[in-house]
Every structure is written in C-alpha cells, then in structure tokens.
Image 1: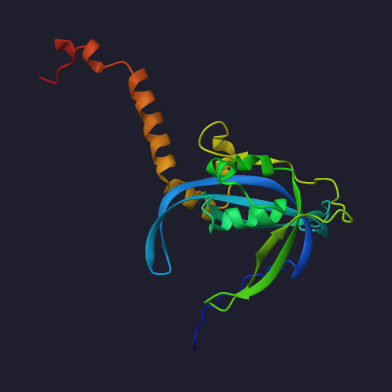
Image 2: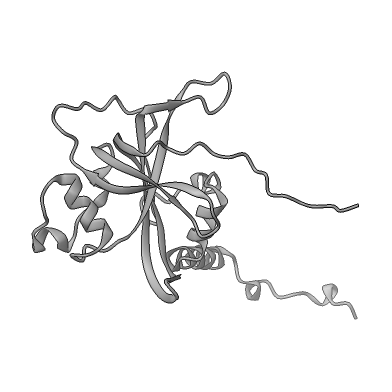
Length: 213
C-alpha cells in the first residue's frame, strides 16, 4: 500500500484583478536586515503597507460582519528616484517629489488616505497564483471611497512598539521583525535595563553558615 502525503490546504480567494478603490490603514516597520534578492545579498530597511478594499466585502467567518479584502506591499524605505516607494507615492499623489521633499518624507501621513490600486495576478515559481499591486494612482474626483472599516494601525520600534500587537502578527511577519537590527537592539536594551535594575549579589556576601562545608 502506498501512503502519500499531499498539500491540500484551503485555496484562498484572490482579490479580483483590475482597479480598486482603496484606503491605507496599516503600516508595520519590519526593520533592517540582510535579504537575498536575485541571487544577491542586500541590506534593506523595510516597511509593510496595507490597504483595505471597501468595495470588495467578504464574510471571512460565518455569522460575523462582512469585512473588506486587504492587500499589502513591502517597500524599502528609500526615496531614491527609482525606488518602488517613490514611484508608487508619485503615482498616488499625482505629481513628482522635489529633491528637498524626497530627503525626508514622513510616510505615516499616508494612513487613512485613499487611492486607486491596480491589482494583477501572477504565478509564483512554485506554481501558485497570487494577487499583487501593479500600480497606485490618485483617486479620480468622480470616485468616492466608502468610510474606513478597519482600525488605523501603526507599529514601529519607537513610539508604537506594542508587544501585544507583535504577538498577534502572523508568524511570517514576526520572523521578519525578529531578525532585524532594530529588534535585536531593542531586546539588548531591555536586557541591559533589567541587569541594571537587579541588585548585585556582591552586596550580599554569603555567610559561613551557608557554605556547604
């Protein structure tokens, strides 16, 4: 008798290809780490931005309210002229950045902003089809975006470092965060604080009565 194990996981519904009204609602700083891209190792400082598509509502759990499908894209935190982040932001705002504007752009101001996202379907090397963002543009004046449904969410290593939120992240996001130099530095700082707050045992020398012989 042959015993065969198969990968027959539930097939996830893909976001329909085409243009979608969208609203940015989540931003997670994954941090800086070495990655292999195209056979080359590069150090990247990455942020994961997520949009909700309020016109693509689905019942994800039986008996619960319908929620919008969401789509994410990861960007290197670079405003270099050919960087994906800058290209998408220029399409989103409908105009280019001056060099002064590009020197330091606070991307958290994107939270809550609407846009038009073009979604296409691609096939991975493993043969799985997936939906990805092809381009982002300004929402035409004739289009209206429904009110935001998901709560606005921001996570970073400074003023929005929430360990409870971190524990609720999917494993693949936690794995990305924990290899970052920012996470490692944060953990080391916390360990150092604990060490500094712990009384030194030198202050309490052992008495002769405590000696084993």
